[in-house]
Amino acid sequence: MKIYLDGKLVDKDKAVISVFDHGLLYGDGVFEGIRSYNNLIFRMKEHIDRLYRSADAIGLKIPLTKTEMIEATINTVKANGLSDSYIRLVVTRGTGDLGLDPRKCKKATIFIIAGKISLYPEEYYKKGLAIITATTRRNIPQALDPRIKSLNYLNNILAKIDAIKSGTEEAIMLTHEGYVAECTGDNIFIVKKGALLTPPVSVGALEGITRDAVMHLAKKMDIPFRDKMLRMEDLYDADEVFLTGTAAEIIPVIAIDDRKIAAGLPGDYTLTLMKEFKKLTKSDGVKY
Ligand code: PMP
Image (cartoon, rainbow, N blue to C red; front, side):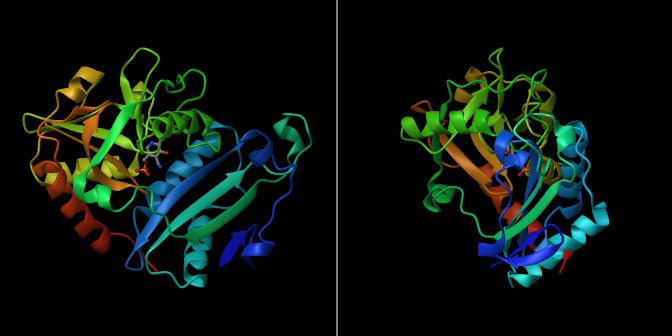
């Protein structure tokens, strides 16, 4: 496996970074998860734009232009001979000292891994996931805005531990006011009376690229769509629930907190969107 590290493609065991890197010491950095299908990198521009927006939001200067970053990403996937892949793009503040001061980090560290990912066991894409509401609340945007895809994922990991402890794969994170934000690594949608609803990102959620692709599909398919503040009651009472994310793609949810959603089976809208999404990934993207 070849890894891109600071301008070079190196073997996996040579891809090492300093223990003084602030990405490691403090989670001070940003990242993206991108997929390629059939030698097409899906929504490449959107991912790169979000990476640079996240970096801007934490005052981190990426020492590559967007074009150079795209080139580095494509070269990494090609070097690994993958036609379908999951690409992890990471930019850290770089090597500093043991204090927090980002000024001590003179140059950002950049690495790109092109591999595979399987977020949930395959069977759940057919039968649907049973999930829970996490006791861990989502970070408030005024403290650490969930729109920033930073390396500091402890908030999400604590919610993931809530899910694991309850014997499930995933957990819904609420805002401090009790509104539905998102899951630990996915956005959430419901279907109610033929309309698609999802929490606005301003509530405190990542502006998901898969979420956006689903909204575009809904528009094309004439499915009414709205973003709306949602409470758990709206979810329990939904006709369908599903999650979206680059790693997860689209996955049905059939129960929340031991309550069945409608009949407790993946719904028609979800199944149709899954099919359309698959088609989209096979035809839309940057070729390599
Ligand atoms: N929310 C969170 C917290 C995430 O980490 C992710 C990405 N894994 C998503 C939502 C989905 O975003 P995207 O569709 O851009 O992958």
